Amino acid sequence: MEMTADMLDRIKASITRAKEGGFYGKRFAGISPDDIKSRGDFEKLPFTEKEDLRDAYPLGLLAVDEEKIVRIHSSSGTTGTPVIIPYTQKDVNDWAIMFKRCYETAGLTKKDRVHITPGYGLWTAGIGFQLGAELLGAMTIPMGPGNTDKQIKMMEDLQSTVLCATSSYALLLAEEIEKRGVKDKIRLRKGIIGSERWGEKMRKRIAAELGVELYDIYGLTEIYGPGIGISCKYQCGMHMWTDYLYYEVINPHTGALVAPGEIGELVITTLCKEGAPLIRYRTHDLTREISGPCECGSAYPRIDTLIGRSDDMIKVKGTMIYPSRVDELLSSIPDVSSEYQIQIDHLNGRDIINLFFETPLTDKAAMKALEKTVEDAFKEKIGLSPKPMAVGMGELPRSEKKSTRIFDNRY
Ligand code: ZN
Image 1 (tube, helix red, strand yellow):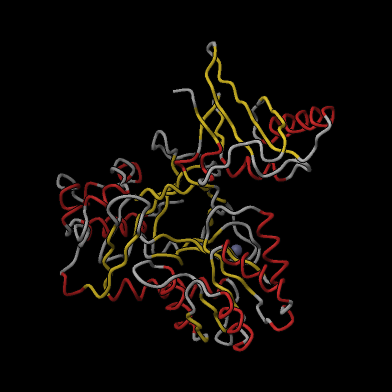
Image 2 (tube, rainbow, N blue to C red):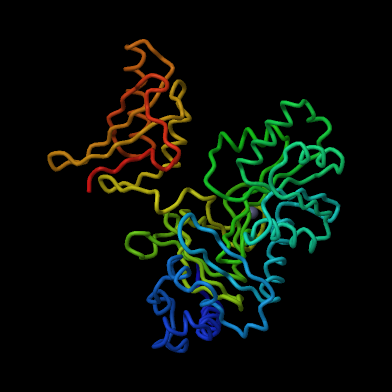
């Protein structure tokens, strides 16, 4: 995004505050904020990685007197030490203000009844949804996750108008409501869905089955939590609250900024955070900047809904392969099941992409024709020519982790 003189000043102020803490005090020991005179100077600062935050466990990120801290949150991570983020009262208030703005962008008012299913506790999700809804003046229904019977009963009895959920839980609830034939007792009109990679098919199903408008809300525990950006009714990316944060989109391999509109990894610098300011924090979320004004009239700039994680992408013959794009492409072709596997090998100096996919077809000629369709679609949409091989249903090994559908055997 653009860096105005005012933004540079705010970033410098944030760096000054960050240096009060142990972590940045050490990292930026030789750097004075006054040395940062331009965007170029700022971009020379090192990135902050999640691993750095883990190393600072438990309270190494603390950048104010401990008496000012009113709360901590923690991001679990899949392995190893968690990350602890301390919040001052101002941090908590700022988060609520941003979240309220998210709800307003999605068209909520104090007349809404907000049904919150994300979890409460150390994790930032549930309480963030709650703070924003209360500040808006809506009626909050703090359900937390699980207990589908009770969720649906409360939705019916309290006439919830807004569902806050992950995409998978929203889908589960939609299916249950359909199965129980209680759709006419439900008054939901909007869904606020925690942003993650989710396909267009799933979005359409949730919207249709629940009869709601869907909004993608973005955030991560390290930077407040959910609520730092949201899509508007025009569904063309997420508006980001750039009075609280500065963001960059970088090439995850080189660390250089990508050209505007190109896919890369989102990097965030906090502008107002007191408890644990973060400078150039790598989110590992893949997205791209969307330029130009939005039809909704909001002045806040936009990033695309998440495309995936930078850890998942693979480069072949100079072209990036994103698992989400492959999912999307294959799901758009009739008779291709969602089960597939890509094996990338390096043979005789060339990269070879073998793409195995399952199909319910059994006729050999029809399978051959389908392989050709897949090859053409891949070439057109992704820019690579794989060697597709159709196999019968259930023939590919099932893996517990979705991310292990692409195997890079080159190195
Ligand atoms: Zn908009």
